[in-house]
Amino acid sequence: MKLSILSFILIFFAINDCSNQGQEDIESVSYKTYTRGSSSTYTITSEEIKLKSTGVQAKENSKAITKEQWEMITSEIKKIDTSKLEDLEAPTESRASDAAAHAELSLIIENSEFKSSTFDHENPPEALKPLVQAILRLAENVE
Image 1 (cartoon, one colour):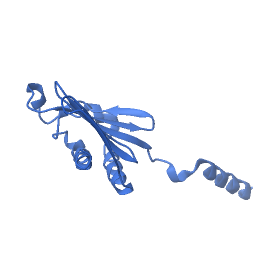
Image 2 (tube, helix red, strand yellow):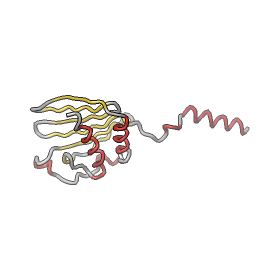
Image 3 (cartoon, rainbow, N blue to C red):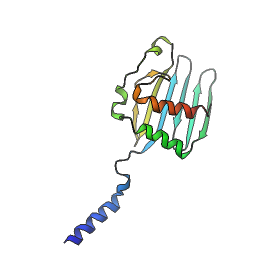
Image 4 (cartoon, one colour):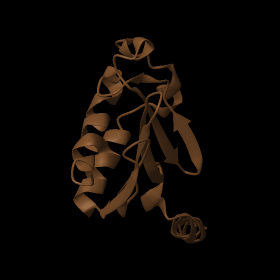
């Protein structure tokens, strides 16, 4: 009897691949900035970072990223409570008077999209600051 229970448990764990239990599948992260006449979107996946901008200086570029860069981005994402992402309040309101561009963060995790509320470009809510800074550091090499 004990042997059959042990066999059942081993088969159950083998079928369910417990090594990935509790880990979320992060597909991409996007950081979008926009003003009245232009926008820029930085989209990062495990393979590359893409920059797409509109307006007077419209362009579209991409660059491969390393496994280490992707792991840095995903480690910052895992520190964020995605269920409260849209409720995070911006520390400043300069975008309301056109003193700063609007910015928004979007995460695709396990086929679900999580969006932040808007905030001033380069001045995100405190919980998002490390991730936004990491995105902007990566983006410097694409532009």
